[in-house]
Image: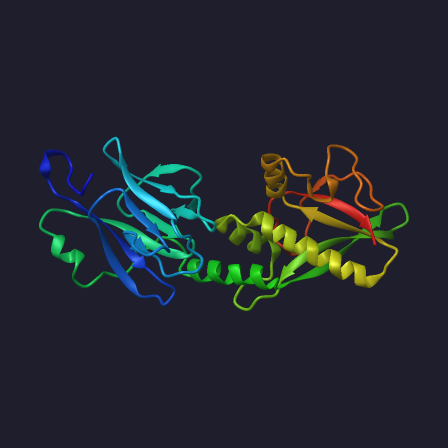
Amino acid sequence: MSHREAGAVQRFWYLEGFVDEERRLRRIPILDLPFSIGRQAGLDLTLGSSLASGQHAEIYEQGGRLMIRDQGSTNGTFLNRDRLTGEAPLEEGDILHFATLEFRLGLLEPGQTEALFGSTLAMKSELPALLVDRTRRFRELLDQGAVASVYQPIVRLADRETVGYEVLGRGSFEGLPTNIGELFELAAVTGTEAELSRLFRSRGIAECARLASPRRFFFNTHPSELRETARSGREAPHRVSPGRHDAGDSRGSRHRSRHHAGDQKPARRARHPARL
């Protein structure tokens, strides 16, 4: 299908946004469908970002409606901030993200086609202005491992003796929050909750090993890791299983959502004890 609709009335769809990380704003007409989007040269819309996949997403027509689907991209396609897991219908004014690049979907009526090739309007995004920049920085945090561990004592109520520590995490990347809850919110936007959880856990294990303490340390697992394990059939982190499990000198795990005082609580995560 082209831009023609019923009754041969021509209405032109277009994308308006940043095609690269240099923040250059462009308006791109969607003249023919399907409309391919990605980093690969020769597509209808070539994205100049290393975070975009070669063939990232596709806009197409189905049942007289404009639709979008992700093409198995690494960093995701987002429609009005929600990550696509299948196909979805599009409406005028929708906000699309291909990895961290933001676009608004527009529609021009007959007689307005010169606006496709003239000066562009300002973005009318309904998303927070810092979202694109934060998601880019968040990817750098993951790549650089820019997190630190904090330790919350676990106290036995009977005698108030410290019996172990829950190993929590804080961010340490300039321009991003340190709060673990806010970091998991960014991870949810980019679909990287499991990657962030693994980073916190691996950093905590490495630091605890250097402490050479006889205390028990308890590590967390985000539910998304368990879902990944279920889909792939791999063994769960730290040999998680219903009821009792073993992770070094360990006891049965249970789900927790407790974090450092003042932290916003992300999704509930399984806790895994280990003596180092």
